[in-house]
Amino acid sequence: WAWKARALLEEKNFGPEWMEMVEVWFQCKEKKGFVSPTKGVAAKLRPVQVGAWVQRARTGKPDIKDVEEFAASWTKWWQEINPPWRKGIVPMPCTDGCWSSMDLPGPNGFLNVLICLKWWRERLQEESEGWKEAVGDVKWV
Image (cartoon, rainbow, N blue to C red):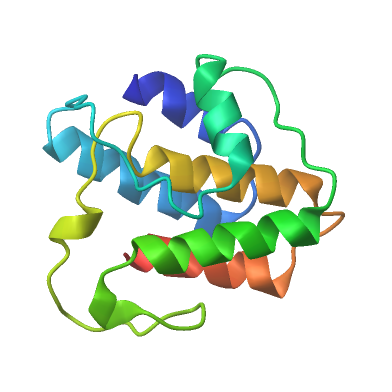
């Protein structure tokens, strides 16, 4: 699943920060042995497009009518799934702490966060500051 997901994330080169983020994600999955547990990232506040994509066996393109609304939805979800000590405005504090709540391998885990960033960027005419900050924050995590 991880190789297929990586290919999907790398379909378009959104710049060095994006490619580095994908590589960091892939290396983390590799270290975990590409396990595929059923537990995933919390669905609370998750963009509705993620659920639809998962139901379609992670194929096709999402229905995103308003990219700003989608970005706001992703940001609220990202803030929700981060550890309590790291809540705040993106980019959030980059400090040490317990990350066990974010250790979510498998296709229902962190991949959903990354695929949303891909969809967000695909809908933009050009790279936005908000998207760049989000990618940087996810890469740091």
